[in-house]
Length: 218
Length: 230
Image 1 (cartoon, rainbow over the protein chains, first blue to last red):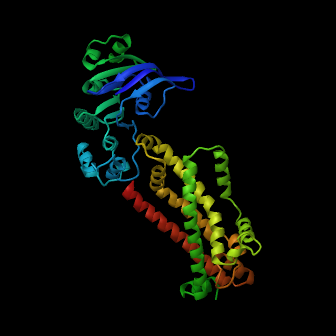
Image 2 (tube, chains in turn brown, blue):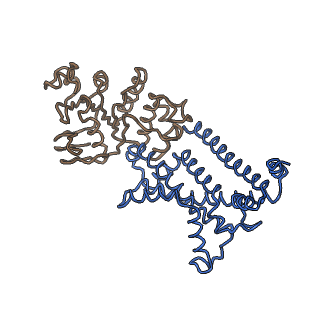
Image 3 (spheres, rainbow over the protein chains, first blue to last red):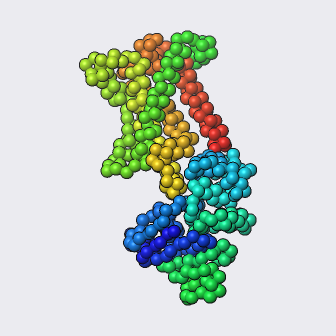
């Protein structure tokens, strides 16, 4: 679906991604993990096409992309109108509100919803674009456990419907619950990638062992 | 009778001369604000969302034009509309239309500059989402103007306040003709110089009441709409 070949992204003298090569294929969710500042958000923005690589290349097959940012911005209109705004074609507002459990909030101003509800609405809005691949940047950061579970349930459902999920998280528990494939980034470099069970049970690199043990903090 | 009481009488009894002046003033200022909004909001949005050489200088100029002296605008419009001027053939000098033109020129930079700032701030907030949704330039402008509508009302109010209160431009291009181009501000200036203080005070009271009422109405609309749209 997406290939990154020897990709570097730099902002001035700061390297945000350093010679990264990775292939994202259809299938269960790909979860990007790593400490803060590792390059997870940069990789998602690059994959989405919001950033251009400084060096290297990004190759995409013909897919429809959508993204949910870590702090999604709700348009100043109702929850339903936010979804309608993003709709790619037929109006699936009711279906999508039901999917994320927000039928009751259809007519409420989107900005008045709780953080958890806004995150679910952002998911519904992204799905309104009928994507084949959906990028999620720390979709449950700063949510309470109940809201986290609600968002994770939606992610699972969406993935089961065949939409490729590529998401970042710094929550190892979430990565274990959702990941099919894990990509560990550290200090702008790809350190290790592999299927989730083998990554967590038998990490190949020292960084991965330390990250899983909670010792790799920066 | 004390002068402020006779002024109140003129207002409360609906003195025809006084209310003819009030009607003209409202018509001229509202028309000017409407035209200035049609010109100023898209201009502000275009500057907010575009990048071109000299953009910073254009923003500084636009902001500076908010302080244009009304008498200078009046003079320029007078020269343009006078018989020997480039637009003299229109025959608009000393008509309400000339007053609308002058006030539109006065108010457009205020609305454009405030709209530019409002829309640029909202664009910073929306940029990632609208870019990710592949929203095109025209829909982007429409979205930002619509979502900034409550803040833009404040820009329109600032413009209305400026138009309703100014005297220098309308007195030059309107000529302060009784029953034709006499507005509240020009009448206040004239009646005060003639010593007819009750009419001047009465007009002053009405002018203040109109400005307060327009602002109160806009504030109430804004609060109600915010409750509905967030």
